[in-house]
Image (cartoon, rainbow, N blue to C red):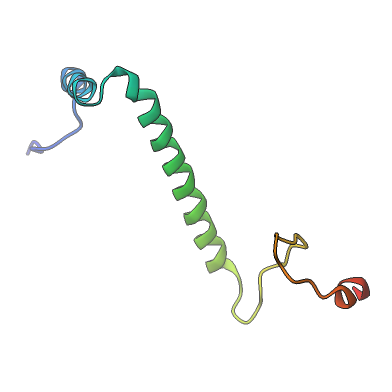
Length: 82
């Protein structure tokens, strides 16, 4: 049995690209591609973070980094003793 919905062929891709250019305009395409790439990068980083959280054994905290963010209150006495 032949599937009714499959991957678009060459001509279908050309038609889709032509419609996208007509809707968004050629000047907006690089900006649209850049935004899509950034969204995919963020999505991959978040899914990797979730996967790393799943691999942390229960009752054990992930390793802490010593990076102090702006506005964070730091206990100087504790910081010097370690």
